[in-house]
Image 1 (cartoon, rainbow, N blue to C red):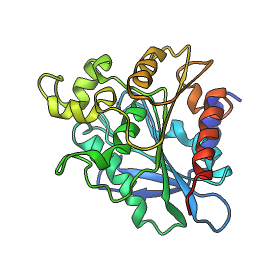
Image 2: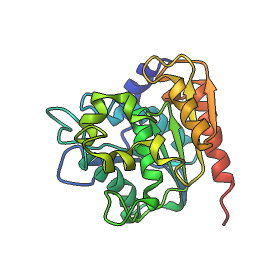
Image 3: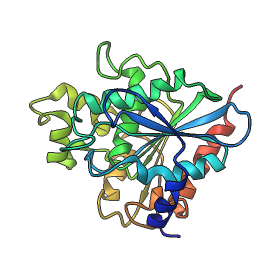
Length: 261
């Protein structure tokens, strides 16, 4: 089944909507498995170069697949770049929203295992996931520092690992070039931040037409993060029928089996 059809069918399974702020884009949907729990949590962060024309809807097929596997899926929206609904993003708002959405898990009336919170991000959402996974190492007072909920692992799918390569999109996200805002870039750029400090996996399709697999190869080699390459294009890692997603979800299941309790 094509991903577009899966997305259309997922409209019938919206999960429970939770407002996380006053802006319409400060929301997240919770998809719970059947049973009593507590359930490990996968926080989903969509891509789209942080632009308003892309939304969390594209991640809903993954959320449903994870819920069927016994995971609570927390599908996050955040303020993004551009006019209209979702505008007002960029530094620090996009990062505040991602951090706030992860921390909001602690206040949900739901059977969640907060010792197992895995961040799953695709494309630009992969950059946000890698940033959020390393929040514990941010300096005091930095955006996203002192997390209330600490990620246990991060799965980055075709991630933007080098913001310098994202050019004007990254400049807009961070409110200036790397020369103009060096501190922001040092905190937000995965290739400069290094490994996130928790178990991590990068999955990237070899024929990705949007984010070249070379970017993930460079990041993985430089920082010792495991990389799995599969056949396919940019959206394959978020398609539950793809080999890329199978590789990613198998790794998630391995992380769950390592639960020390």
